[in-house]
Every structure is written in C-alpha cells, then in structure tokens.
Image (cartoon, rainbow, N blue to C red; front, side):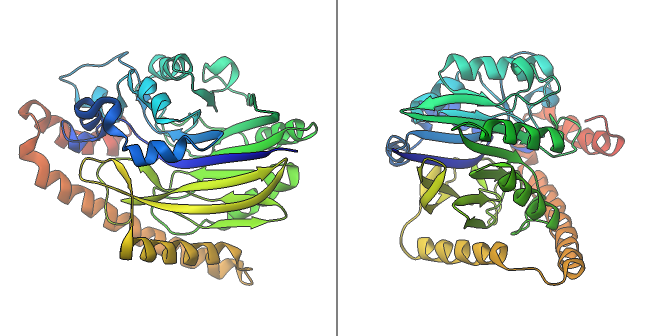
Amino acid sequence: MGVLKIACVGDTMCGDSFNLLGRGVASSIDKYGSDFMPDEIINIFSSYDMVICNVESVLSNIGRDENSLRTLHMRGRPQTAAYMARWGMTVAHVANNHILEQGLDAAVDTVKQLEKAGIKTAGGGKDNSFQSGIKSLRLRVGDEAIAVVGACFHNGKYAFRSDLDAVIKSIKAEAKGENLVIVSVHWGDELIDRPSIWQRQVARRFIDAGASLIIGHHPHVVQGIDSSDSSLTAYSLGNFIFDGNSEATGWSIILSITMSGKEVLEWEAVPIVSDRNHRPVLVEGVRKGELKKEISRRCDLVKQNIADVKRYQKEYESELKSLETKSRHRLWLNVIKGFSRCRPIYWPQILWRSVQRRLGIW
C-alpha cells in the first residue's frame, strides 16, 4: 500500500470585496498574474499528490458590469482558474455560501473554467450544474482510489446547500469499496475558534459512515484538528486567500496530511499569513512560534470531552454574538476609511448595500 501526501487549504476568495474594489484580491491578481502566489508556497504544493481548496468566489465574466458594485463583489476573473492550476491546486470544493452570488450561469461557468484548467471540482451537484443531489468526485492518484464528497450546510441566500442524510448516504456508498473518502464541508459559524456541538456530532457521523478525512471551511479562522481512530477532522482551515483581513482572519494554515490507504499516518499544520497584497506567505521566527502555540490550543479545544453540553453551547452562542457585533463595527470602520479610495460611482451603491442587506435583496 502506497503513501499519499495531501495538502489542504481553506477559503480561497479570488475577487474584490465590495468595500475594496480596486484594492482587493482580484485587483492584486490583476497586478501580479500567476506570480500572485509566492514561489515558497508553490514549492510546497509541488511536493504533494493532491492539493485541495475551497473556492469562495465565482471565476467568471458572465454578468459582469464594471459600473455595478453588485456584480463585482467577490468575483474573480476566469483566467484565475489557470493560475490556480499553475500554483499546484488539483481539487476545488465549490459548495459554499457565495458560489451562487453572481447567478447560476456564473457558478456553472466557474466549474467549467476550473475543469478546463485541469482542476477537478467537488460539490457542484449533479453534472456540476448546481442542481440538487450529491455527486462525489472520484479520481485516482497514483494507485489510490479517492472519493471527495463536497457538502455545504450554510443557509445563506446564495449557498448551494446539502442535505445531511444524503451526504451520509454518499459517504457510506463510497466507503464500501477501497476508496479513501474525503469530506470537504462548508459549515460552522464565522470567527469563533471552535466548532459547535452540532458540528462535533456530525463529524462523528461522517467518520462512522466511513470518512477518513473531514476538511472544514467557512468560519474564516482556524479551528482545531482532531485525529483519532486513524481519521482526521479539521473543523476550519481559515482564509487561505481573502481580502479585508482582520488580525484574527489574517492567518491560516496549510494542512499537510500523509495517508496510507484509509489511515492517517501523520499531519502538520503549517502557519501562513496574508501580506498587504492579500498574498499568502509563510511565517517565520517569533510569530511562527506564537501561531503554532495558538493552533495547539485550538486543537486541545476539540479533543476535550464535553461534560455539560448546555453550558458549552450557551458559552459558544454568547461569544459568537459578541464576535459578530465586533465584526460589523470593524467592517463599517473599514468602509469609512476606504470610502474615498473607491470610484465615486460606487459610493451610493455602498451605502445602498446596507439597506439591501436588511431587506434581503442583496
């Protein structure tokens, strides 16, 4: 039985956020092209058999209007898919809460762009058309048969959501053979450093169904990694590529996993930070030591047995509410600071966005 090396990274958003048009990730990629990704990261990816990411934005020009804030928000360019392939990414998860943000046609085109570039996709539903149903990605890497089950449990307006029972059924079906089953899942709450009780329970069900790896994303921060029973659950890998980073969301990890068949032999969390141009870079020195210590703390959180479930969830929800309030305040502070740096045509659109959000039409 051979050894398989897998690298996993978190949310990969290749557009500009609404308050950073002209200064976000897409603008930085326009500036650097394929050189946006530092060589040090590309060299790391080149040593792996698989590199998996969550694509958190469309990569399509369908519906694009340079004068419309709405059509530009979190939209990457189609050529970015080819860049991602050059960087070493091999599998892209597309079931998340932003994939339908620019409409169904742009989502379908995103999958086409990724596949054309040689990147396999998971989570796009039947025929990658974002229709209901679970369709696993099956592939062979060397002598290893692998099934990647992509799922999303976010209830947002633009999410391509999954049914939990259908996901578990798919895991069981794939695990009956010799497939190594990887579940890539968009779930959880933003900014909090640990998973909810529900996530922990669902992770257990995935493992019992036959999953060897559970790779989570969406919270935008790193959450703990639990490796037991020869399986591994990474609840959230944080932001690999994103703009508008706060200190909490401005660092993440490359999760390095070594497999033998369906068994996890070893793993390592390699800390990375986002630079001023939103490029992921390796961190060294004192900061690396600090982040390693923080990762260890978060891993300890998910290894603890929870004696009082109600108390855990109450404290979780209280902290989450506080984090959400602080996040809203920070967002508007950043909007105000960057207002004059946006094209004037976007000024009323930025202000109108908050009203649209409250009305549920954004």
